[in-house]
Length: 372
Ligand SMILES: NC(=O)c1ccc[n+]([C@@H]2O[C@H](COP(=O)([O-])OP(=O)(O)OC[C@H]3O[C@@H](n4cnc5c(N)ncnc54)[C@H](O)[C@@H]3O)[C@@H](O)[C@H]2O)c1
Image (cartoon, rainbow, N blue to C red; front, side, top):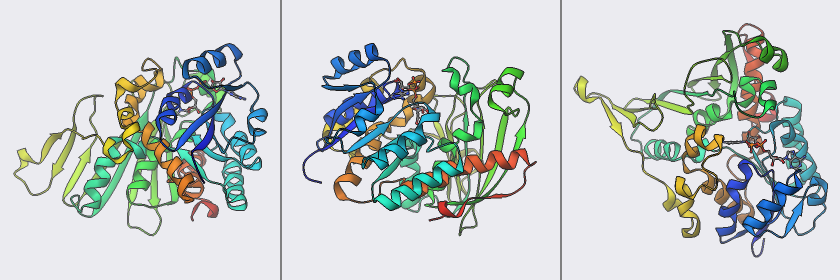
């Protein structure tokens, strides 16, 4: 692609966070925005000086100047919007999860293959500073051989838009799945998941799910590793957390129990009181073009009052990394990380996990199209 890649931002709640980052990126531009509420659309358009404003998604797709869409609509809209965009010849970056059914994940993977267009699921965790820190230690050999991975994403969704009441906890599990698989560059082969506890009647009725907590083991394909993840959306007393623990032969990283307190690094074979030490995680802005480095910092977040920012801990400074990875993939004509197959594997872990929970923990294999 010559010149800047030109995109449209779809959904301007969380989506608005990315507008200043694209605007500052040397190789990208957001030429259009889209949301259904016309008054709010005008407000964002004026604030970020974006000329083309659409309330109709089809009109965005009909615009020949748009190379890609970045979808930040509610979860039930991710799959159909992605498929329509690919049909219209647009590359897609879509917020998590890819879809909520195996069939929709398969349709997206097949359409990406058939069209040669790029697809990236905008998974924030694998671009967070903690993940980048752990990945760097792992790559340098400082962790030794990895022996176990664990992640959690407890989040009380009372106070969020009502569509969350219809969600199954494991249908939004990618923040827990992705670091475990991403770190070891692995794909999930099969899962076993247990449901635990019970949500209140109205939530159980709206979602069709009675479990308060879903707790899943993931077998990593072609590896001796197993990961453990757990997830809840309602009726459990716990502060928000997107945790990631990694256990190696030389060093292990454990996530803090309380938000904004230091994480813990354990080093093997030291005197017992010295094994655990609190660690400050560095920022990874230096991996980015100078123009967007400042966006890893909370002060540069457009709406730091948004619940997704407060509860998500600012997503570990990941937003500019996501933009840069997607834009670079388009410019270099390569697959982004995660590509469609990996995104489908990470998403289907949660879908298969819920199926397993409904069958009392029975092993459920990931579908073939997610295995590379
Ligand atoms: N860490 C993360 O990865 C993370 C964090 C926050 C939100 N999210 C995801 O981002 C998405 C949006 O979250 P939110 O909190 O901003 O939700 P929201 O409900 O506040 O905003 C959704 C936006 O989508 C727009 N929209 C809905 N249907 C549309 C349509 N048919 N055409 C055009 N626009 C449409 C709405 O107008 C609104 O601007 C969700 O899928 C959520 O899971 C991900």
